[in-house]
Image (tube, rainbow, N blue to C red):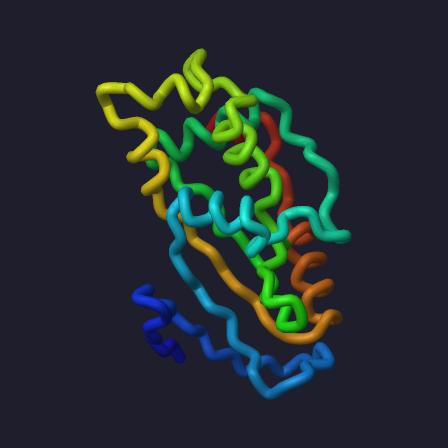
Length: 174
């Protein structure tokens, strides 16, 4: 069942779950929120510490400049990125990134002028006739915010990162 709720002017879709597996939930609230956030909003929340992308579960940065540029290119060409999974840490009031760290780091690196896209750094797009920075910042991202116990957080992280099967090079070409 879905419930729509308005929070600070943004509509959030709440997904009520009837989870039959016990993950040691501390409260009876077992809801994941599906939200949209612009690139600019995501970047600002990461920069001001409201979103933490470097939690203990996460690995180091593994995307090279080429992969990071593909993230930027995907956003520029309206190629959807996978949803970002975040954990609502009730103790700190922060969102912790469960899936999406590599994409977030690519956006940060680009906006910090440390990654080139189309041969230019972020600030070089400031006077661009196509309003690149404004268009880029307004791109919508899907954010899934999960809640529950620490055990559930670890289980979600494990499943997100182990259930996928990489495509072979032949499957990618088809």
